[in-house]
Length: 290
Image (cartoon, rainbow, N blue to C red):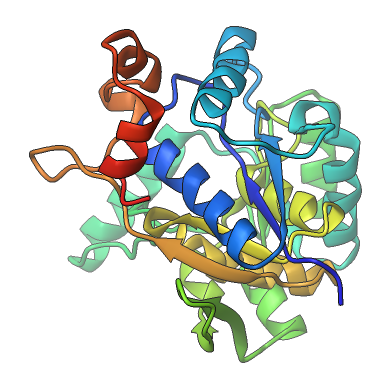
């Protein structure tokens, strides 16, 4: 029997807060109780927002909490070739197409369709409007001409082509705090033609995370409920790429006094600030239920 493999995978685009501490401690707790391994992965594909000082702070904060992880640490920015290989496989299977639309183009197209139909346009689990398919049926020659001309393009997953190739049903395994497992239905089609390679980055969160989990042998993914819907899409990508599907546990989110989830974008209090105020790792653990 191989040991279970867990991973904590923060992005160095801001300071860690209590929500990150909870997820990291929960991963470590599962690894300890299940006799497994704990990996740390730095998800820094966004090279415009990720910074070395934030990455250094991640190591400092986690060590302060008393966590230990295996080395070397996988840094996504060093493995773009792996993600390109996966993308080319998807393209070779006919389930990816180039998209030249800007966000403004998409919003204008959606607004026109809503005006014509008198109904709200469908939205994905992230509450973004589903892509209206503007570039899906571009003639291949035109798409190649625009790419050759250097026109910026993203690449989208062709939902209809993927559904024809792998109609399902799709499912994944979920486990609870006591290790009990159950099978959960996945509905990847609700994501529409989602972006798998971005214009500014040669991959996406969805593509890189499934590639990394497979390459690192991750067997148990422990992450927040805000990423639970993404699992549906990840299950489909794993099937298209012939990758294993880990077991998943989506934990509750740490929230502020107003009920909002903690977030870097809201300048939620950082662990480094708590440390500077004299809060101890033991107090953090108690506050978070460990």
